[in-house]
Image 1 (cartoon, rainbow, N blue to C red):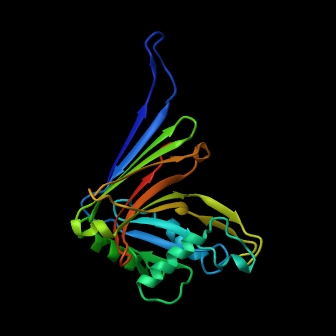
Image 2: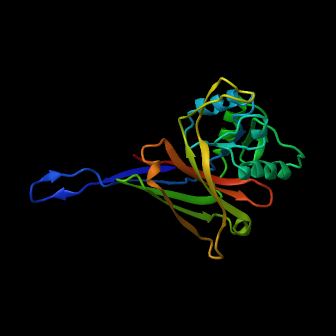
Image 3: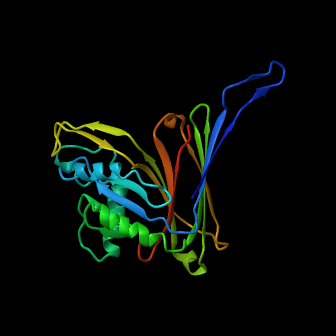
Length: 256
């Protein structure tokens, strides 16, 4: 992955005074190797989930090697605590993942690596999988470009292209907006009285989009100024719609 940061300045030639930056632009492009996507399905209403959340936060991954995302499901909300990060669509995504594997149930916490169930927070197993992925050629070319305006509004441009023609018709493209350094004070449910900390939390999942018959995808997304100063970023990934396999993923932290 190539990461580029550019900051634009306005220069007054009359008084030779540099004015404050008017925008910050960051961009990223996928490389030759496959970067696996690590999904965590979790909930603030699940007593066994906080250790998994912490393990994900402690990974401090290299975006050239692995990309983490935390999807908060809503099916534990009924037991007394509504997870403010949960969405029904994330629960549906987990159920579709289970269906790809022929499983008739879902559970939390669950780790899914490149579309396949990964049992437990096992760093050794994860490292082995990451090493194996680095030997796999990328099956999609991805790019992300984010322009942060002075008022905090972010314009995100995402593009994708399949490497193999055979993947074009079955390629689902998703763009996830995630946020780090989130904290909740839980006062009900199984985690009553606990302070929970989260990273890589998916706040919005856009898609599935498809490639055109010319093998092209381009999308511009505008995020409101309320995102200014937040520890956030975007992930684009391509998934095979027939078997759930992740073809490629790319992460871009928003520049300040």
